[in-house]
Length: 622
Ligand code: SF4
Image (cartoon, rainbow, N blue to C red; front, side, top):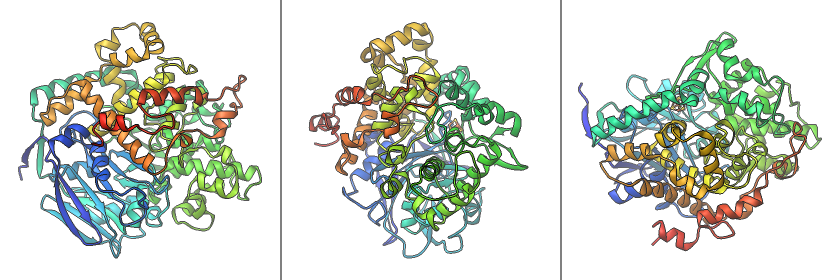
């Protein structure tokens, strides 16, 4: 059957109430499209318009949005991703995540630009989406089945794809994730939100529409440049393509930012064993990427005779070095347990590291010890099954530290466990963690890239960090609203003539010393070109970045309505007061020196609250 042609976005969003089984179709206005772009931005805006402040994340009133961006199914590089947005049961504030599973493609090619789900089904349910709408199906026969294998029981992969939860989501573990294929909406407990709604899965059966950009010529031009930039950038065309994200291990270890033993130190003599290079050799890794990807960071390999996904860098850091484990077979097995149970490897690793240290310090009594694999598999199953002490571990490090003490080594921000970068070796990353909207998130600004991996600005300086944190937060909001992979930011900003032809020392000098001007010189027009070519709506790069500002500030505003302010924009004491064991200078993150300047460049008041003027200027409120 030939597919029908859909030119540009359909601008049709499904709104599903599981309690009443009512389904509405919303139309995205051109104004909302221009102001919030799509993906994350539009998802946030739709939830902002509907969700009352103070809503319990696990109540039927909470809403979860699944939002492919405008690039989905166009064939643009790295565009096979979709966003999800909801209020997090782990942190009590907004959480957005991005996933490369096939659900987004199926939803989009069924003619839908997104789906909002609220309410609570009476019994375990899954919903099925086709071009004609939504049907509600009994999920009792897949309830209790792991997240990976339950997918094939509800949808034949030739006809559709799903987002599902595993036992962790069903048991409402606050850091349960959502799974599509072998890709994840990892952070902040979105799986628990689905579980609280008795929603095992959403299946989309697409392939009905072929999506074409509105301006084919400019799309083709942008695509050609994008592929060229991706191939010529050392991070995307070499490191990630050949070795996946574990290629971050060696530079992180060299610069002492690899978390080891609950961030006690930043380097380890066995680090090479968990690196991308070592894994490629040991496990014969092959590409296992998201749809429509030109970077190909995802890998599969052979671990103890089994074909398994290669753990991502964050998993290797948190369920590896951070608990003193450098055995890649072991880490791959734990990665698989988390995938089956449907839970976030970063939070799981952060919690286990805290438990190991709390045990060592005598605050609690468990069999978990740094450097020993004993008891870790059982702990992961117990977390997912909410069993015994696993039920408490599943509530996260912040909750555990409140009950048992040890908050100084609870490595979380706003309740979300930190990713695998120690900011005592990259101060801008410290600021970025402290102010990230979803909590201890590395992806909000990903400052570590310019500070360490590309070595463009002085990682121990406080100057320039507020300006670049703001810039990358907003740019990443644009990227996550197009729903293109964030890794494209390396080639799309660094391979353009402006950056490429400027000698690196001069580029670094400008970025470090005149950041307010340097951020305005960064050429990110390729993202705008892609968005405009697909939607047919012209926008200047300033307007485009302003949409990113708007999306970031809207999310912050929604969080401040839940009580977030300066007191929450902080880091664990370990990072503020305690040097790394490996560091003779015992450097700590000078957060206070950066925070006021960051609020100022963002337009927040001194308590970190967006001012009325800012909200009006960005047209978030009237
Ligand atoms: S680079 Fe990696 S995460 Fe990004 S789209 Fe490709 S496979 Fe997915």
